[in-house]
Image (cartoon, rainbow, N blue to C red; front, top):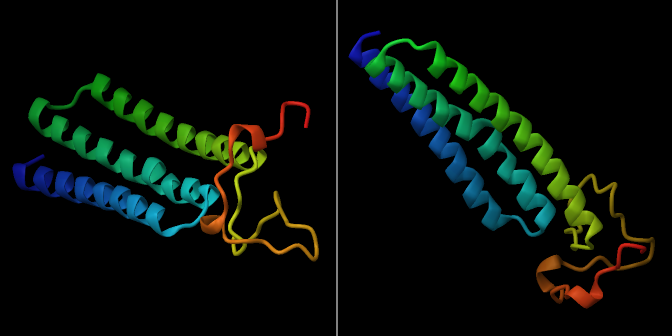
Length: 140
């Protein structure tokens, strides 16, 4: 691999991954509830960070040459990031809903926490913070 090709690949993978992470971070400021914040962070961990890891591998490939160890580390890193991203997003989302965090009324579909008919669903930004005493205990 020549220097120009390596530089272009590292730049494309690194900048693209960084922009995805940046876009996810900026999107977290625009959404209104915890569930949506967890949702917009998933592309950063599922796509942005693997691209950055790939850029690091291409750089290592150019500088050090091919190494089975480096390739295995890259594959393990990407696999772990994808698995952890999906499992963590699911776990955090369920914990958020089950802990009683308010869900923005325009979140759709909202199958886990639909307000009862006739009840007004306020904007979570206007809601009072939930204290430890307000949360249900382990038995309900």
